[in-house]
Length: 229
Ligand SMILES: [Zn+2]
Image 1: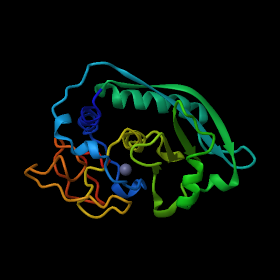
Image 2: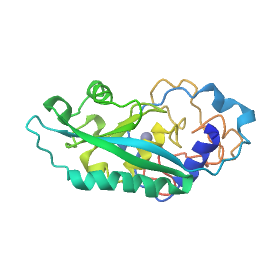
Image 3: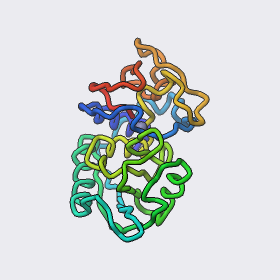
Image 4: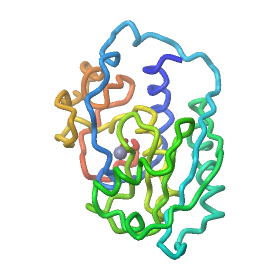
């Protein structure tokens, strides 16, 4: 399946009434891959197949194995929520396992250094790793983040695995930038980022690099009409 069309469908799917705030996401934007700017890819069509992605859930607890996360609920809610969120994009998720990470160090994930370390702990080469951390303590109060864009790992604080942060961060894993990307400098290493014009004339090369999502001018505010990927 063509990647550009895949993420185009994802953006279309993710335009339901998500209410995540931009500042709830701590994912930093890397530069886009060069194929995004390849015009020959922009007219490809979806192939109609359903793609099944494997996920593995890690529950982070304190050193005594205690967490305020309802583990049984998380193990059913996360795949169910992802499947309902991505069904219109012909993407489904299969939970292949879970484990516990009992660590005082990771149970309060208050620095990016800790986040990066967690996102490579007990990781899998054949699944997207989802880390659920019990505390809500974090730099900037972020709900979570993906390891990068794209990525095969994301983390969420415990209060967010059943909120729009879950499909949001998964969207980053699957290659989506924020729709407001480039409106203001989001940081990260993407020196290419630029404002998307409301007439859509530069929609494929600025903003989220997806031409069929409208320009999103507001950074740091709740925008109910468009998920803040
Ligand atoms: Zn985000």
